[in-house]
Image (cartoon, rainbow, N blue to C red; front, side, top):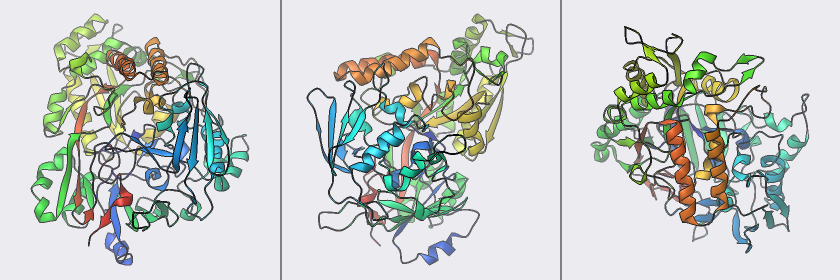
Length: 594
């Protein structure tokens, strides 16, 4: 069950997961897809579905998946999901100085943007200096490039039209991998960065929203945006100026058009796939048995059978700050949430094996770490990672030890007699997450907690998580990768995805009294230390310690790691499935055989 869209190459930062199976059906329930397919009948295309609309077409400002950027942009390098090796993309070659402080990239010859304009080192310098490293632009990308305790950013300068040099203030192990971050067009965006609105903010912050005409989105990836119909579909067309060619000199990608239909229910996607109109669907545990027996009849294949690279978890709002004098979290509940024994009790009270058996039909395993199991830095329980096997009696003892008590009806009260009751949010339309939330409600009722489980619309949900911070408990997920520092925006106390204790971000209302706990600061420090260390054994030890701290303090209570699987029609040739990249990570090489 792929958490990350199968068609989107990994971009070097973590994203909030909107969906359980991003690359799903073909048709949208609200309209007749045959009308669209007829008009494009002669065009080789791949039609898929997503659960919700994209939130922005502006990469630096995006925090969510699904997003268009894996199709529309490339960086200087990328990571091969099969081998884990860094491979050239816009950069043809690179050189690293002996002291590891200078990285010189040479761009491929003749690169162009989707509007035909040349792509040069001016674009690289602009992308980093004017956008990613610009303190006036609130982008999570900065978190992955801040170096050392000083948190300084690299300097970037043009050597000539094809060579660009990055200078680091000190050695930084993940730097090369980080340069997979998309390069953006200076000629299309530079003026918007310089120009300020009435509040003195760059108008870039309102540039390339989802209401931007597709022709106005200038890209360098294999596909460009052709059409976006709100709540219906996103359509991509092959970028004629994309740089790749095969060994015979033919332009890539081969598939002319991609269509994402927006289907807000995974059951609808499954029905459309089974009816023969779909090209691919994410295979959740719920659908696996049904689809597996229909492979031959339906002329498709189910790919994958290894743990997914994403995480899913429940977490509490630990923010002790105020806005306009009003606490972000009810002080009574904030005391509960900020008691580590309370969080540990919740972890012991969740029956993850039942969750695996029922919701995931046995196709998953307990999840215990923020680091994906495929990573060389993953710490297993056998190596000393703390786990929370189902033990409601232990949960009750922890609560009592920390001052909670039970009334005659078995309801949990705090030391001042307040009933323990809170609201658990998640995004609506995701059946897996809704089933998980329903079970958590039942499990926590067994230790006396009343959970008001409330799935809500995605845009409302993300506004609460990242802007208003008006929430108590949440059920969510993050994408994953091999390098833990990709999650620097999560684990740095000031990071843009430090969701459990979010600091006010640029452009937001200030938070009075925000503070990071000592263990948060320690995790942030260790993440910095890991980037400064080049001895792989020592890097593993550092990340092992971060995983031990997260499992002791439980900012995220991890749940289940489902298997990553996708069904794809047999007419697509060149599928090389990986849990890290999905079925279509090599979209440029895939052909339609019919």
